[in-house]
Length: 219
Image (cartoon, rainbow, N blue to C red; front, top):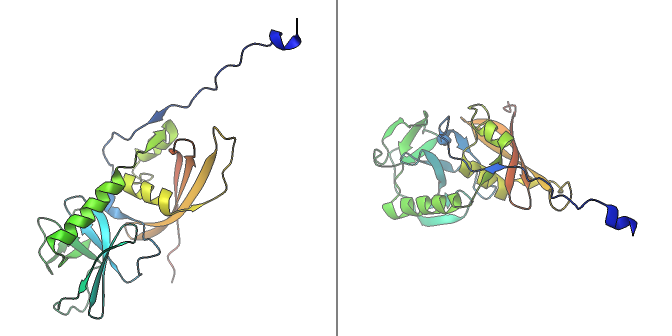
């Protein structure tokens, strides 16, 4: 009898269990931001009070007002409207049912903002593109899901999706079935800079590991 016939049959490689996020965010998603390179540094984040998230950016450059989505694509280009002069403008613009243009206050996420003079159509487009981004399925290993349930390691889902699309990728490691890639991208958490690092399996886009590394604030 040929020797090969005496070998035991190949056993399937066990597949690591994966999970979808079904919990409650331990901290406000409005704390987090990834700014694409296509968005100018002087553009102000647009915070949506109803979604408790940053959904885009707004910049006034001379007579022109520019609105961007989270990926840095234009949502609207319009004429800039005259606004009341302010010595120190709040860092965020806010939209939502409780906000009026130029009204200043504290957001649900706990930072100062002023109401954005964006028309309802533009606000609707920002929300529409945010929701479209949120439709990308995300799954986690047990280790990554445990990270998500800790306030100091949690990252909201839309930030993870942005990191997977906009982050710097290293060369994949491992065999074809279990190959993974490491994505790194700069983020801010409560306006403090950090580096977000994800390990993602290429075959099914499962997140294997989530890490945040504080970055020193420049002088």
